[in-house]
Image 1 (cartoon, rainbow over the protein chains, first blue to last red):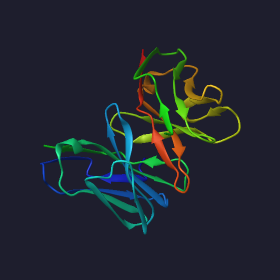
Image 2 (cartoon, helix red, strand yellow):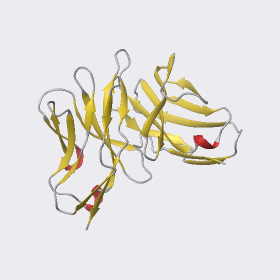
Image 3 (tube, one colour):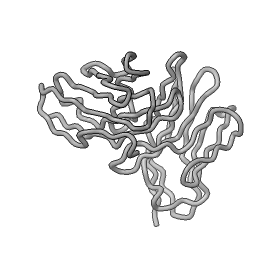
Length: 111
Length: 114
């Protein structure tokens, strides 16, 4: 969905490096989410945010942190990347508890 | 735990034939159910949802889903499959109280052959 953008689209990094994935949305939604997708595991929620002042951990938040810089921007950081964080990462937004709209994803490889 | 299950990793169907992608759920209370589709190198796209009302829900691209409370199922269907329907399909259920998050199934790959 072009209304939700993610940068970068692909990233290769080394173990121990800090990396930031960025998400922006023009849908005016209040809620934003970060998921990771692994083959055979579906999508798992990392962090979610009601609004700029409200950030919450999801089911797999260890090793990750987030920042909601504005209503439209939600970034995900890996403080010290490790190989098992190699995955496809998705940002999503929603208006309240309605259906979520996803960005195109970031493919992250940690060597 | 509240969850959804997609029992088939892959579904194969010939173009023009009807297709069904299965989903069963386990929730307390009334379920809010969703289907999403993921095309290669793309994010998930919303197809349809069931909140309340008619058990047959119509969505995008000619897809529909049937909610069956007694069987705790929410199967995705299409009367006539297209090769372009080949993708990864995810069922999801909305859970939680104050913050209602989505819990996704593991996905079913649909392959439609010409």
